[in-house]
Image (cartoon, rainbow, N blue to C red; front, side):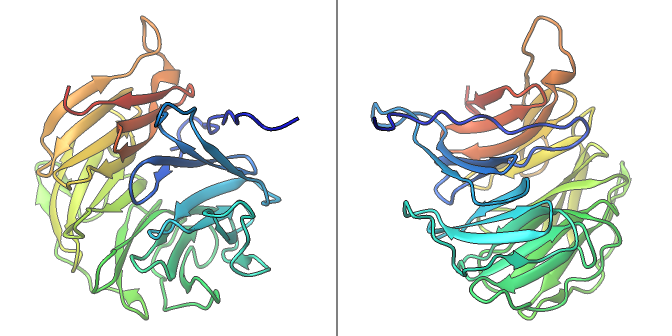
Length: 321
């Protein structure tokens, strides 16, 4: 008897919270967790073969954050106890970088981000402090990432030098750190628009992501707004209210000219880099929208914009048609 094919289950969802989805540097894979299992899978079949799936099952608690290193060789996965494992995803034995996992935070790990050289890892979530950055091979801290007063929902690492780290938290703040060793950047001037003072969001900040060329950072929030910041010094550039519900996820297009957003208003929007709406796609499973149609996660892959709903429907959207 031999294994013919693995069929991967989709991640669990929770009302009022986003479902983290990640992809690899080439944007061909979909990466997520379900309970104690990490799933790495093709987004669409390739070469006439079934969808290929890799599972990692060595966590003893629910996995809450995943991130693949830019070199494609290593995965970092964090769980609800604050434990981070770094393991080889390019080999069947899935060996760990170190024999013991890293005990990073006093609570749940909510997001992970690698630097462009695949040798530093930013870890954010619950606990005190709710954010750390470490050397991947030793677990040693590389600076001080204090500043947030509540749990940190998301982190992004600038891939090119000079390195920067951006974080977004439930204290409504988007914070920037420069290094290494990393320390908080100086306060930036207030950005004012028709939506008001948007240096900070007016509700939980859920997502923060660097553009592919590292020139800009986006943040998205429960306050239905997307904000843009300078990628090097963190200066606010622009902000706009773009949805009628909380924005749970946002992602840059591969060329950095567009942004995809997934919202509780049951839609996915494609924005230009000036935050103007280029396309709105209403995603409804039936004739009448219900809570299950809320969009709680998205990534921008080579196959298109991949969006995930509260009702566990995975959609692939062609941004051109």
